[in-house]
Length: 202
Image 1 (tube, rainbow, N blue to C red):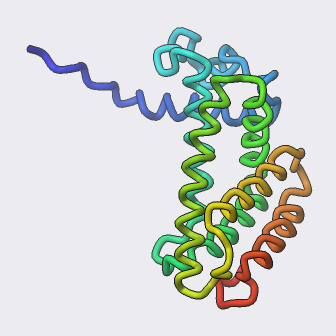
Image 2: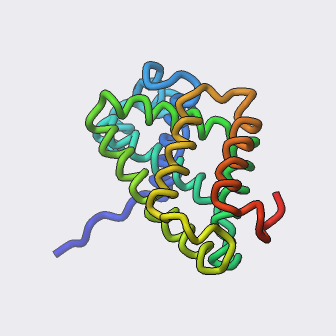
């Protein structure tokens, strides 16, 4: 019995190029401007090739969400103490707002579209659920190490953080992302008690 054929050497780079092209289109023109034919043309392939990698538009969007969340994961600080990771993530989000405002624009498009598209809502909710679970763990670690207010409920606090950032996502961020994100995170840090305790420098 023969095994499955191996993917060609260019398969993964091409798949990544299609995701990046869709990500850029979504950031620049929103869902109204996200056309699979345009994405294929930007990468230099035909629509049949795009459909080989992404059979549906939802599959392509899932790839875009995966890329966006991978960028968000760079906000973490590997090697830092567990209790310091919440403050470190806030610092990382500030950095992303300064240097990658398109990430916030993509997440805003997903948040807006999810309210009227069941398929995108399912993708977006899976992403938010995983982020929520991560934040609950970070809050608990920070509380355990005395770096956050122990009176706070981790689940409710994680929901507040996500709701705050979702609010930022829903407003166009070009040119003002860094300032608005910094102020919003500053308020969250004050609420959590992070700015009254030792935490990584911004």
